[in-house]
Image (tube, rainbow, N blue to C red; front, side):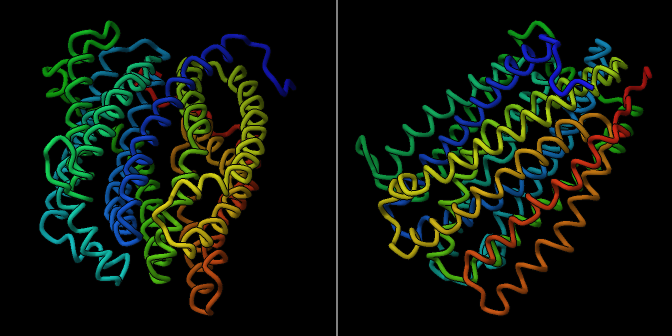
Amino acid sequence: MKLLTRDRSFYHSLISLAVPVALQSLITFAVSFADNLMVASLGDSAVSGVYMGSQIQQFLQTFYAGIEGAILILAAQYWGRRNMDSIRRIIAIGLHFSIIFALLLTALCLTVPEQILSLFTNDASVIADGTAYLRIVCLSYVFFCVTQSLIAAMRSVEVARIGMAVSGISLVVNIALNYVLIFGKLGLPALGIRGAAIATLISRMVETGVMVVYVGRMDEKLRFGLRDALQTDRALRRDFIRYGLPIVGGQVVWSVNMMANSAILGRFGSEVIAAASVANTLNTLAYVAMTGMSSAVGIITGKTVGAGKYELMKEYAYTVQILFLALGLLTGGMIAVLRAPFIALYTGITADAAFYASQFIAVLSITMIGTCYQAAGLFGLVKSGGDIGFVFKNDTIFVFLVVLPSALIAARVGAPAWVVFACLKCDQILKCFVAVFKINRFNWMKNLTRAA
């Protein structure tokens, strides 16, 4: 048994795919981080309002991650067989589902934003600021889905750099517009959090335009145009629904978990909400390297299983587990070291918010070790290898039987905010025991292609 594969192509593919994806995630984080820093100068209420308004975007992203996962898993396996026609149809099907959901969510946010935000907090000032932000930023949801579908399409055929380039363009546009619109530069009025929302909307539109032009005119692998986007395939649509529903279901469970997190912490007040925003921002930054490597492993896994190379896949699986455990230890240590200087960047938050943020980040420095191992292993190996339903069942059990009940009990008995926060993150460690057992049984390698 080789704990580390000697296949150089594995490491080459891992790095060539992981680095662009990680950089794209880092750039996407930088856009959100710039929003947070600029809005932070407006005070706790503004930070909390944007954070709560962003929860709907997080819900969309979490749901869309299910669509993206289905595209990546199915398309990567067909890529292992070099079946380009099936890949194009899978991409089109994913586009159709994601756009429909984005339109429904946009309509909901435009009509009842206050009622939605009241599910997370009862602070009137936070709801007011969040509503102002949400009514504008929700118009970007469709553009987001189109862009991410096309980026997922390119990743599935091992083209990852375009996503990084598009995110870089979005970063420049968003930060420039944030500066002008939030603070009222170049003769324009200061729009505050509305300016941040408008900047996000325009940057999403630019992203979509660039991605559509690249995929339709410049790409040499897929050559995916408007005609392809309008096509469908009944058999592949059934496959997409069959294999995509557990992925979407798992993401919906996770989004419910995240919104419940916000609702539970939201009852503590604006200082704790602001602290959670700061802590989760650092958590997202720390997640960047893991996201890139996990996505790369998923593509390699799908291609290898789709090609029927099961023994080689076992060798890869041992290597992946060691790499992600080491990455978790490194990332957890970095979070602990960066805690104080990172919080110091938020000059507009109160001392209480900074105190809570320090406690929350200390919790994350421990749970990130488990996150890197189990989340990456279960997605990059188990889910991408074909056993899609297992991850959905596993997440559902932990969220509804462990995470939320423990956090609610802790909040009800008056436990400190950091204890409640730790309960909300406890599954990241507990899932490791499940992941070790599941991954090393190797019963998750399943070829999902119709040609098989």
